[in-house]
Image (cartoon, rainbow, N blue to C red; front, side, top):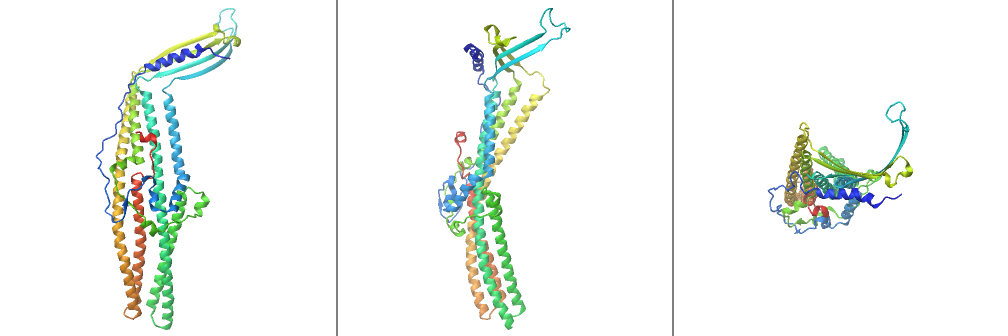
Length: 484
């Protein structure tokens, strides 16, 4: 069965001409980026360390640790957070495609068949008319809403902005993932260093305890000295166990970030690369931080696109004040006998136009407009808060970097001084000029300072990573967002 060319051309030609009638006017405000008072630079950190321009897209490579690079690649490939973000992008893309389709005519084909018997006593039929009737229909119907006021264009604008917002949200997930993996890896290497320190110290404490036990048995020392040695050994055992506990918890947390299977989470095996000391030696402070770096943050881009979508929603709401114009067209065949259905005599067609102007809605349209304007104000506040939070993130990261460097310098000098103090205290004790308590206090202070030194190195590394995250490091804007 085939249709003649006029069958298709008539309704579609009429609707195509109707589409040209729709003007370019769109009610509601056009989007403009809010003007914010931002500084020209993000600031600098006073540092004695090496500074250099760092590739923000792959900032982790500045640490020169192949294991860290591999873990970040593994996380990016397996993260369920990224899978979730990608799913939301696809959903937003489908919504945008569906919204865009509303700007075009809809065409439907139909084939209907019906058979009915009318009651002989109903009085509805003239004398002699058959009681059983058949009706068959075949054709196309088309409809089109003329977008005089830009309602459909605003809806398309809002849907596209929300799609871009979801694409940027994926960037936020990615930069957060990279930051969390790197900081967890640094924490793991710090716990490794803490375990090594505690094990070395415990071995020294246990050797000292055995010596004191021999001296006590020989009557050279009293119970006080013996119990102090026992206390220090037990205290170091606690420190070691806490370090082992922290390391185990960090390994499982890192396994989850890497997207590993449940079996690999409950029995995590995390590769080690560069030591904490060597990672710290590779630490590079970014040399230049212009404020334009903030504009590449995905959360700011997402917030701005959400604001643009809310702005377009106002136009959609206001368009309800104006008339809605819909054009319809139909073309097909109708016959009481199926074999005559496509006969030229069975031809039928229709054209129609419908205009609806709201007159009284008891304030319903105004309420929709007010709601849209309120949501825009909320989106604007969230955008401003996001920008404020971005500058705060940079400020805090720079502050932490500066403070950590000073703390590192002071702690290093304290460790060196305590090593000398312990050496002198041991000499005084060995020559009978002081009690074992003086040696134990020196040992305790040195252990605490060495542990603090490890924590400071980890904190300094984490602060640098926080700075990279604060400027959107690790994420490259897709072309769809770069064009905005």
